[in-house]
Length: 179
Image 1 (tube, rainbow, N blue to C red):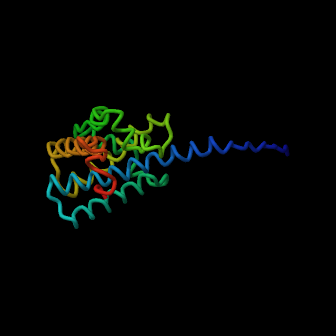
Image 2 (image 1 turned 135 degrees about the horizontal axis):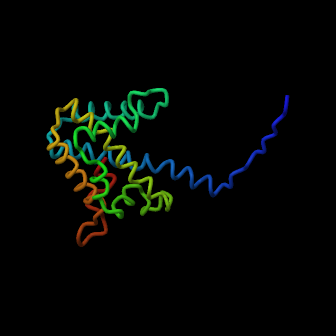
Image 3 (image 1 turned 135 degrees about the vertical axis):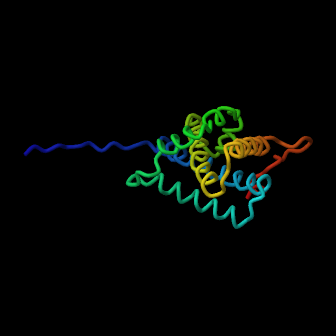
């Protein structure tokens, strides 16, 4: 029998911190998008607080199932295929949002995330929308037109979150207001 000696490789602390910050990037996007989704559903689609809580629970359960490697029913491919079959252009929606707004959503411009992780931002935005659309279509009977309207309102709220008020140093939607 042969022995294999494997050398341990230490990762420098600064590189480790950057990798941890990149891993948190998806959580930053998901948290912001969760609040913005709830705001749009409450303000523009008249969902009650109980319905929004139910929507959030179903979406989070779908996210947990998606992150479970042993669960083959909810995968990235199946979510993309679901939207593709229903002719919902999530990638087009993600591309329509300016990069400055995407960076702000990921907390990069606030100094809390890692620069250079901007490629991951678009996949995080798409993932949150891919998780949301089936819940809206199946539980709340949203038509494709309503989904498109929802996506437009979410883009509007992202813009409002990013944009500062005129004659003020504050943003129109702050983290506190959204929460």
